[in-house]
Length: 214
Image (cartoon, rainbow, N blue to C red; front, side):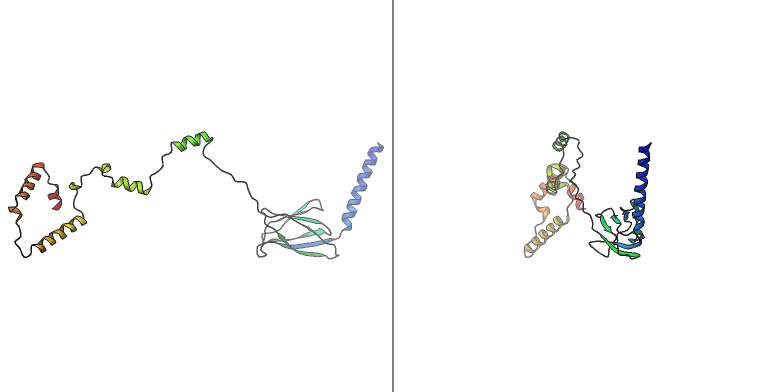
């Protein structure tokens, strides 16, 4: 019973002493604005302000970084915000009823470790997919395949004349007429070779060239 009474007396004395110490410190109005330490024009909003000397009382600045609340002299305040290093401020004792401070928080740079994401669960699956992977052709290979005659298998003689072929034929005809301007123009109807070629084309059923010209 005596021990319990001693414990209660000790707790009472301790509480009274702490209360007296808190009461001894005068109250002041603590006001300020929180800025970025790298640029004073940048305001840090919604910063948590913890009074470590008074039961971890929590306050917060507004969206403009402004705060104003009552503290005791010599109180230790801790400013914390996501992305910034914590800052600790001790309220000076000077007998003033107000204390104005511009708090500057330093940005916190966190270097995260490199993370490599692979779509394969094991290296064996990656090796298997890599070996069986079909690599797309580059532009040169695609051009070679498009120009390779064995791919499309089309007879050039069965195609209609393009602009370049017609132009070359026109130049050749013009050249022949200039060369034979002062001589007799040969008549193709009297050319036995031309008749033989015509008869062969008729026998082979080659009418594509004449149809395309029409």
